[in-house]
Length: 299
Ligand code: F6P
Image (tube, rainbow, N blue to C red):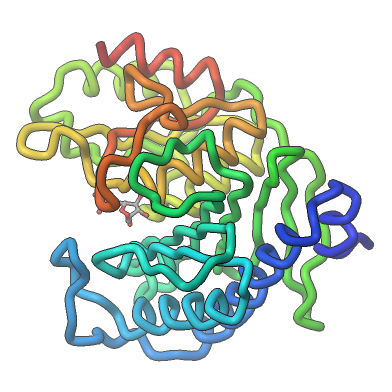
């Protein structure tokens, strides 16, 4: 069985990026432990978006920050839970992360996840997703898994009882197939174009697979090798809810590396410039054919 480290070596990942992946892996192991053993109480605070934070959101954020602070190669971090990016030192790597995406699902014991994007930059402002040198997501479900890419191939690892990650899926590829995860369905109240798209999926007998967590929903598309996840905007929130830097760009990097695509309806997600850290974007992400269909229906 191949380990996480075997695969990074096989993919000829540089010593420096290997070290960054090791920090991410260590943080994921610790978050996996606390998600399974901690309470689900509110922290009594709100994040910069005005969303109630769970004690677990705060803890996951601290676990990642503490781990990255130990790595001198990481010079810059940005967390979805913090108002600004934080300069840690002179290291060339910049890591952005959503520590516990979908945390409102924790109390009902649905899967949640962590999202990381890795760049070589001195600020995230001005970055485009296609500058990422690596991306990694972790899913905390019945099993803890990670899917990662360093731009070579997309691989999945599963955390075993010995607390080690081993390779579960090598070279993940997304092809065409009828599976849909339609986010923000409330938009159909104002958008006939989204209604028509959802109607198309239903009439064509697509399989509905939607959990309410972006990480498990897109992880599913990667692992089943087919499908589409959508999260449009409407009315007062034309850009929807999902954040370009922390959620959409790393997901787009993984899915694109697996042969899929990601668009905001007009522009590829990986081509969009981060103008501010909390920038939101509509997203249509999955197989190439399905993303093209979204762009056609939603013009
Ligand atoms: O960004 C957080 C998140 O929970 C995503 O994981 C998920 O896809 C989305 O929000 C769900 O949005 P809504 O609350 O609008 O259903």
